[in-house]
Length: 214
Image (cartoon, rainbow, N blue to C red):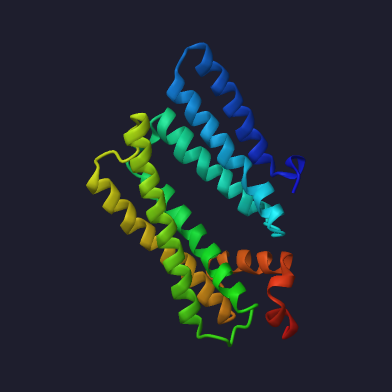
């Protein structure tokens, strides 16, 4: 996917980051410059990365990744949304964990080439859950590293914040993995199963066994 084919929301985010970075340079607010650059890189990489791996991502997936990075790094840290709104951290971690749960399911299902009878649906969903929780744990390590190296305050109240995030991550991972379970059962879960089906249709070569039976 070329940069021009990125969702509109990604281009809007890039424009905001550019203006904010220029303002931060002029006012010599270097932590803000760093956060703008970091957010830009995170929103920039998914498209080329997935393209290099020959994976076609639904545009709403790419848009969701960009919105999450913008909301958690830029809005959360630069404008202190985490401090202003007590529910911001919960929304961020739950939303990201749901997404990781979906991606975890798609990866686990890919290992079986889309053979929905190769393993019980609950087993594939459990693998998806574990993948999502693992990614969430890596994010907590990232927050700790940013606080220690750059003097940020991503962990807020320290251990309490980290454990709360881990609990919320598990809830979101459960939702994402459950969506995969419902998909294998031919049922819907709030539109999430439709997202799974869209990804599979865009990447048919990875799920041949499933599509051959349809």
